[in-house]
Amino acid sequence: MSYQNTFIRVSEDTKASAGVKPPMKEKPTIASLEYQIIMTHPYEKTEADVQFECEVIRKGMSFSTSKEEIEARETFFAKPHACFRSSPLVKTYGFGIHYDENGHIMIYGMETPAYQKLAQDEKLIIKKGMRSNRKKKE
Image (cartoon, rainbow, N blue to C red):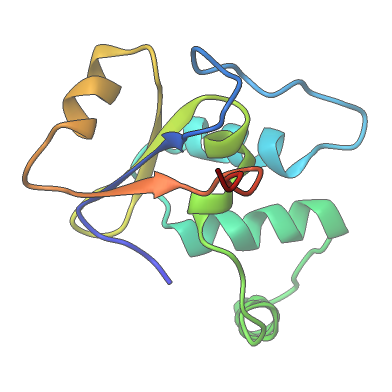
């Protein structure tokens, strides 16, 4: 699933109060890879592009031909993958994700004026990020 003209707000139960760059570790995390790819290519990649690129980097894959890459991508997406509403960038690190009219994405820290503007833009579909924990029944 990919969105267009959509903004995903940070999760209601995030502990973040601002967008925080995920820490770089010896073995990159999904969050650090997503952050790096999106920030390096603002509004150039779709959610699917970022997910597949994360997989390629994490598994150390390389392709001799574009046909190999296409086949690997088809194999990767043959199984369902969670949308970015459940991304650690949204749940943990305080970033909202904006999808433009072509589904290309960029992230914005929750403390920024751009985040606030996008979160209130009536032309966009506004979605909440997935919660990290279930709501407690009262």
